[in-house]
Image (tube, rainbow, N blue to C red; front, side, top):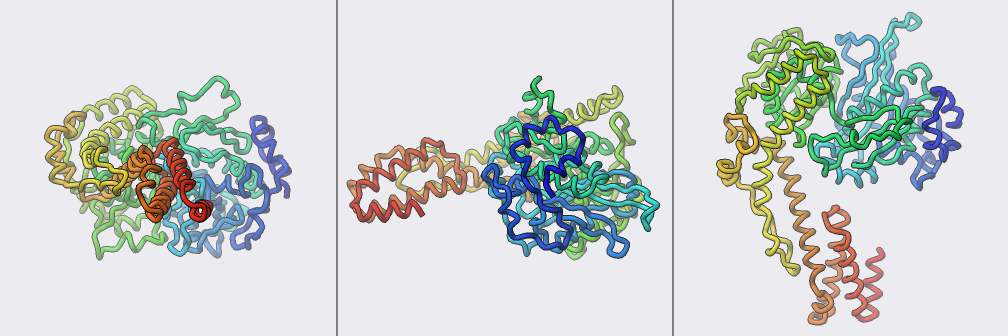
Amino acid sequence: MALRGLAGSGPGSRGPLDEAVAADKEREAPAVVVAGATPEDDEEDEGRSRGLLRWDGFSAWLHCVCVVGFDLELGQAVEVIYPQHSRLTDKEKTNICYLSFPDSNSGCLGDTQFCFRFRQSSGRRVSLHCLLDQFDKDLPVYLKKDPAYFYGYVYFRQVRDKTLKRGYFQKSLVLISKLPYIHFFHTVLKQIAPEYFEKNEPYLEAACNDVDRWPAPVPGKTLYLPIMGVVMKVRIPTCHDKPGTTQIVQLTQQGDAHISVILPTVHEVDLFRCFCPVFLHSQMLWELVLLGEPLVVMAPSPSESSETVLALVNCISPLKYFSDFRPYFTIHDSEFKEYTTRTQAPPSVILGVTNPFFAKTLQHWPHIIRIGDLKPAGEIPKQVKVKKLKNLKTLDSKPGVYTSYKPYLNRDEDIIKQLQKGVQQKRPSEAQSVILRRYFLELTQSFIIPLERYVASLMPLQKSISPWKSPPQLRQFLPEEFMKTLEKTGPQLTSRIKGDWIGLYRHFLKSPNFDGWFKTRRKEMTQKLEALHLEALCEEDLLLWTQKHTEVETVDLVLKLKNKLLQADREHLPVKPDTMEKLRTHIDAIILALPEDLQGILLKTSMT
């Protein structure tokens, strides 16, 4: 069936899209595949406009789209996987099936949106999209994709339907992606899911073809993304953005009259709405997340559990949370046994759960947050208390933070008063979130700046870099040496909060978050040393050097320089473009000074 015919079945007028889709209007679309159907081998040979394979544009944003329904005999089942060449293992399909529906006790009538995260099957070859690899380096560390995990973004509908044996229509439209752009994909689903439930596969097919025509998810660029008559304007953050700023607002212009949706963020959740029931303890929760402590969020529905888990992970930004987290976790999850075993200490993971069974299964976990229904903006639930774990017996227990954890830092009463005043004055949830996000950001930065300062001191001096020796090594991170620096250059310089900062650092240095952070910084600094070494080489008169050395040594130098070029390109070393050009010129000059037979061999190796 032609896409042209399908597009006509969408919303009446597609005015803003006319220009965006004109070039591709005639492109043919393959039929939607029902789960279990055999993909056509020649699928990817279709449509090569933009010089890309068919579906490359789609793959830059999504792995696939699934429709999960309820079958009286089979239970939850994947009814549709689109596009048809998308690969999912049986284990991945099973996880998607169970994670795409709320637990039966949740009683989610109507439309519900939530998010889940699941492990990619170990049997599958880790294949990363070339475009994503290219742009990943410019993303902030907390938005870089994790090759071992998929995200699932769900729009679930449950409504009464007397024509069905079960009496209910139950179906989920699920977007599977490597990208952690929670707010963005939930917005996409809001645009397409309600109409999909009315118009079924042809509508889904047309929507996927729109996604396939989107520009690549380039960080820092303003992107205009048309989908089924709506144009979304988004900007993906870069690692160069100042933390806590929203660039898209500054980019909004009067000429944007044709834009239907402007997203100020692609990844952030409503922080205050999620922390609202527990904001008296928000600083303690920040400590628990920072230290990678095992945390369970017990909530009445997947929406509440997933939003709260994502808010917790987000609260230590711009630090990345390096442990595993599951916004919505069920007893059918393939990691259920691994994460609920009592034979070893609970792992460093944040789980969001709704099934009452977990109250018993996870009661040995050290930190449990029990929340009730999240209130709409303007309302504030009764503040929960910190309670002893032995008081948690069932999921029906009263809301509270069940832990015996003693925070290292004294509670900041100022932020609590500020948020309470906002509630009394009926300040919008968005504004409250800005205040809370800024507070968490300043807290995290006060904590991390002394570490950044110390790690920067481990870098060798630039004068120690010799072009004729391997780049020098970084000095070793010595915890006690770092602790001594805190007396003069500790967090007291930027934070008013008192408490046992030293104890917090000692605990942090043993956590997965420190391990992940330091490995990332060490890699960046090692790459910087490699880049400085390249620059030092370029400043040398290499041709003069070759005149004083043998042909064998000269050939060895050429091969080493070529390897340096390959490494710089492969590892995206922070090298200036003119440095690379200088190095290529040096290599060419050295080769031309050699005998012709050697020239031929060396030029041939540069072409392979």
